Length: 243
Image 1 (spheres, rainbow, N blue to C red):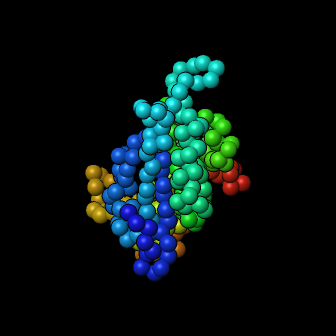
Image 2 (image 1 turned 135 degrees about the horizontal axis):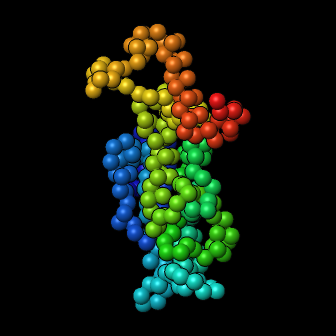
């Protein structure tokens, strides 16, 4: 997709993924709000096939680990030129390697990335990548959680979606964003809708009272209770003591 400006003249936020499986994209980024925003040129998505930079007749991209061990490691002399190619396309975008040992992806980090020109993401495979690439190219390592995936493609989609939905014009109202989990350092309060009674359970009376101050107080209390029960670490990070 060409990187045309949006209707108000802004350049789109650009996501570029280096991967052995470009056919995995756009995946879930091709539906709903993310797809609508991409069609509106609020953001763009490009992929680079790492095997295009592979070596020899068979386009080799990996080799056995130095020092022995299981699996294969993506080669520095393949990743280096591939990253140079991607960086030339969007020089201001940070170079990010999706890695389980990286900095945890948080709402705050997603917000920071969304405010920039975009991201260039390296989706690894096998046992990982040659460490020298991380140092030489200044890659920032980011993790989406304490678990291991077969590759970085799904992690790249998670990071991109977390950023895209924060771009101006993607989500309908700013209030929808500010009341979500993690935006205020708390988990989101419970939500209800019609019917009023279902399966022997009713919507809390306060939500039907029309008293906006009481509703706001109830929602705040519910957020704090849920956070204390499920994610007390979030309260500690805010300097609060879970009760």
